Image 1 (tube, rainbow, N blue to C red):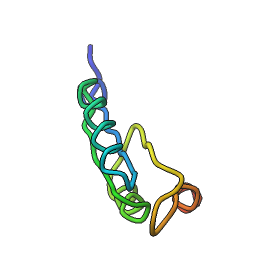
Image 2: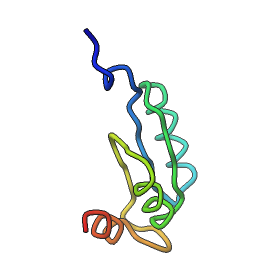
Image 3: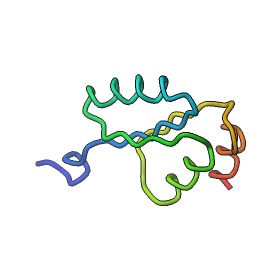
Image 4: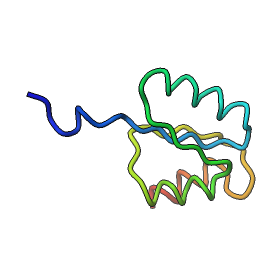
Length: 77
């Protein structure tokens, strides 16, 4: 018997200001069956984290607008 969660694709949010890194990670996770969302800076990532549920979040530490450390701190608060 499958549960409702087993049927749902896993979701990953990739937050990085580098388009090259976002696209490389997105391609890899898509191949693994993940639904992939991307954000190009910490503030956009923070907004997405507050409007959707993710199984995995990958982010850079150094980003414009809101860096990774501040992003993690604000999200955990």
